[in-house]
Amino acid sequence: MDQRSPTVYRTKSWQNRRKVVTVLGGAGLLLVGYLLGRWQDTPADPAVTPQAVVTGSAAAPTATSAEPDPSPSASALPYPVIQAESATELAGAETEDVEDEGGGQYVGWINRDDHLRFDNFDFGDVPAAQVKIRMASGTGITGRLQVRLDSRDAAPVGELSVSDTGGWQSWRTNIAALQPVSGVHTVFLTFTADDGGDFVNLNWLQFAH
Image (tube, rainbow, N blue to C red; front, side, top):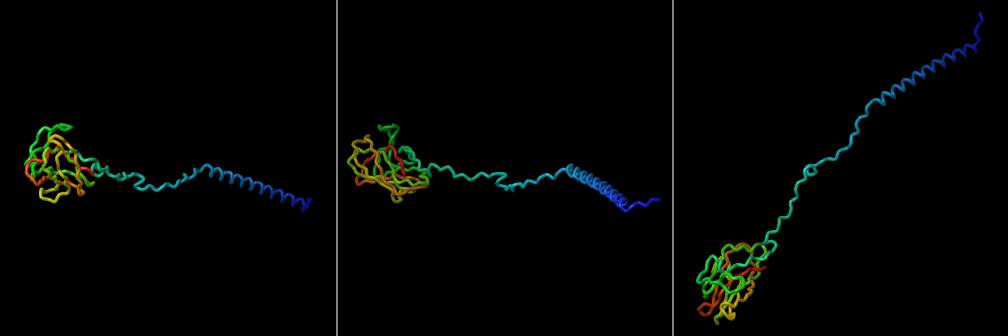
């Protein structure tokens, strides 16, 4: 029997190892392909997007406190005209139809120590600083009209002189300065003169800032 030469033997062994390596390499490639396929088929975990923290104020906005609407007193609106005949009390005076613009009535036959009272007048938060008084006089008696608060005997917060205007229906608007007045008060108009007798008629009055 011929004995194989070492060269031939090594060639056969090398070929056998090559076949084994080729088979193993193919198996490895198949395994890698299988693993890749499984990896691609596996659903990816959902991406987690960071969520903004929602506070109570962002989720349900609360209404901001708005500034309160200014009241008529806080916005210094003009005071209403007060008709003299609307006084709560007319002490010593009487009313009669007036011959002045606007019509209506006036309060006349006013003598010293008479008074008019107006209850619960609201001056508001912005103080009144003056009062306009529509008056007429047809006598030579000179007197004074005084504005008092809350009592007929309180110290006057304002006053003005009364003199002849040219007739009992000759109307003129005079202005008296006031000490600053705010809040709710009972207003008294009092009258004084050196001589007795009727000396003034009143149509209306209006406070002003």
